[in-house]
Length: 293
Length: 131
Image (tube, rainbow over all chains, first blue to last red; front, side, top):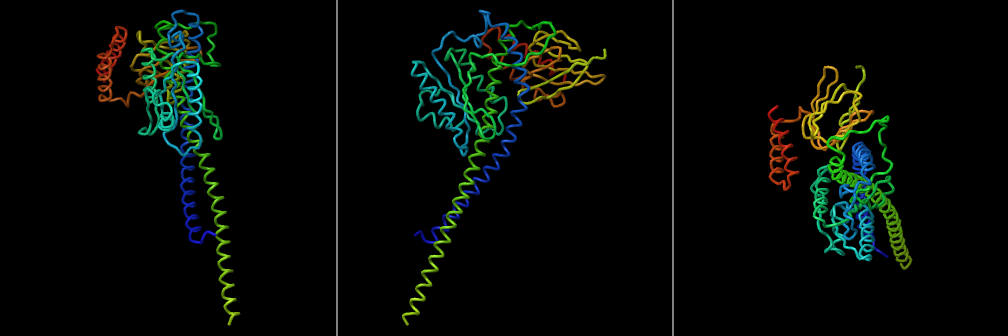
């Protein structure tokens, strides 16, 4: 049987682990609230953008001169996967599930004989992917130095992706991120961003029979709008990712705290039993000694 | 006219303004557009510059950069990548932007890009002179 001192040390160590997980849980809860708020605040822009785009795309669909960001390169050979994960751990299976989804895609695409390139956003995903696919990663970035993800961060990634597209380094780009459903569920989601897919269900304003004037013309506007749309989609994915990360972290840490609590209870029971046993042994020894006299 | 124009200004990070106003002047890439209530539906790209918002005798100036204007019967919506009230602008920030625009111009590799960079630079210089 473990001796009393060993048990005591274990209880203390589990107790300090519990303190850490509890602190992290509370931090995540606070950050989650902020992240959700930011995701909500960015919504009007995205919605408007989608409405405008849906409107334009409807007109440009059959146009042979449609911008390539919309029509694609006409090929389907090289795929670019942008894998967005968190920079920090302690958030349960959040990072792994995104990476797993990306990996399934890579395997499938490679099985079809297609070329795959990867951009990693966030340190954790990069760590996991570079073990298997180091040679596929063409660019990486993370936000370790960034306190709050702003549009500028998304813009930087979009810029890089768009330059690559212009240089014909890939045909299709897909973004992987953790979609925030609610605190309990985050769904790893692939989203194709190039060629752009017209947003569905975007509400277009009622023009009461009138038609839009365009200044400059429709095509110019679409050409200017599509790169921004890519940036907006990345930005939204990043914001959702932050919220998902914090939610996953909160749930994981809540579980860890509870497990630590259970463990402390069990160890305490064991400790008390051991103490009792020791006292009993001592008593028997004393009584046996007294009887021998 | 008793009608009011519903004006929305949104940036990717948040909604900056949403109110009823009398008139908004916006810097389109092809020139200034004065928007009053019941304007015909229009979509336009924005050049960096000042948006002038008039409500009664009140006048507000907001600096915007990059984005779109959409006018529909529901009102005017500006989608700006960057927006800040004129009071928060200072010569230093403008100077930095002018420097960036100059670099853009130097980097431009096609006529088209050169033209848009030149336009952006001209606008900023105009702004700098106005301050």
